[in-house]
Length: 215
Length: 402
Image (tube, rainbow over all chains, first blue to last red; front, side, top):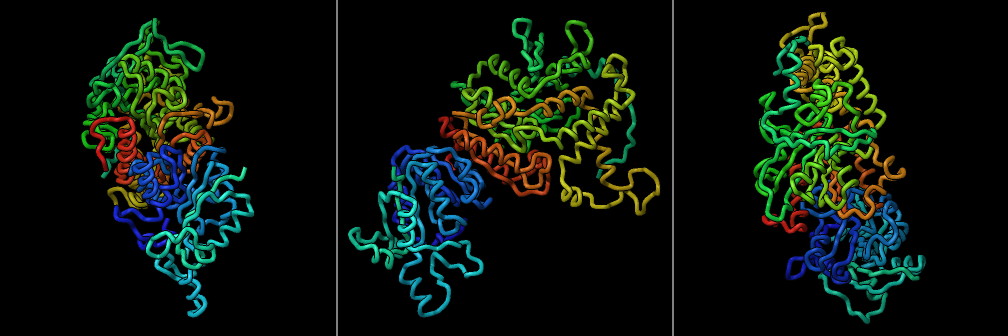
């Protein structure tokens, strides 16, 4: 799924997307992982190679699925909004939603399912509160388009944009524990850890959250 | 393109037709005596019985590279080599062979003829040892599970404990699912293609039309045609013609034939095969009866009709795959209306609910159900990739890092 222009997301020295590396670092070695919206399987492959995980994927686009399966990845064609309900409770250690939250019809339901199926959830998304986005709407007066969100308002797959602040709000509403959060700037570097949330919400281009159930 | 041939009824002597069933050419045969009966779902035992099979490639020292290929309704063991009756190439040469996705340079491929068929494994045209005459309808009704049970006995005989993979399309795919359900520890990976966990009412209905066509042929003689030296060719050909339509799609028929006339400019105002599509179907019917037994067609269609995994596992397909260690790759085709994608998706949902490791791909094609037998590059890439990935996990040498 090309919810974002992922080619514009910064890559590290090894050629891996920084946001994916960040996600991978949050996953314990050998864990069972479900990647929801796994695209062409780059994260699943990274997880298998760097963390030795037992990974599965769901992907909406047929091209993505067939590419993944041809790479030997365990990926099925499916929709985050409808197909997560089929998975049993506690089937995975981690359920990952990488750059896909904003393209789901019911982000809250998806998040709830993720934390039912997995003990932990990792969610990454583009921050719609980033200053560049804000400035476009404020001064140019049109729906924001950025390097990683290049779509016009009428053909975007991204129907539920949110800011870091919005996402934290949702997490508190559905009683989710935030174990870890990282915001990346436009160059893919993490923002200062001790920076206040308003700073992250303004200067973070993307955010990655590690969540768990509040038992 | 296709020859125009009337549906002629040419008699081949019964004993000649029975020969392939008892002593198949270009095949290996294993005979199971009274000490090893085949226990059938029908509640009876089949004994003695035999399995005809072919192998390709070499079994490695660890005996870990064996792939079982399960054939479809009208297939046989000649998956990747010349068919002894028709002289044509193997039915899955696009998929199986040196350098092919199921690579016989890396894997040891076993393809048995199923129980109930007519190419050397015991079936209704085989000789009943008790009477010395062809079984005919005395042959017990068999199921997909019976076919798989017999195949497991073949593997025991070959000394192969665990299969690296089991692959097949259509009725072959049903056998794959049954293998994974019956012998999960013996199946490392499974490739059920264009199939379902149960035969739909529509498919049972089509099969019934085919069976009625055979039984309505006066030469069928209540199934005793081999004894009475007749052959229900017309009935079997009509059954094949009807079934063949279900293997294609409206779009494929339109693309191949449209409303084109066969070797003529204008309609003849008769019931001759004016249209190319008629001529093609007649050809399909006639060439089929050369190599297939009418009673086998009754038995094998029945086995598919009876297939219902959920019914065997307390109403829930997922129960069949609980704690399954098998890696699955399910494949369907967009224009397959015999086993539509929705039925493959049901398999996927059941496997997910059972926590099994599953891949699922739907391939865009207008070729209908038959697509699994045809030139479909995406199918080949997916099968190759899936087997490569499974090969790495299995520690098979030569699994190329792609």
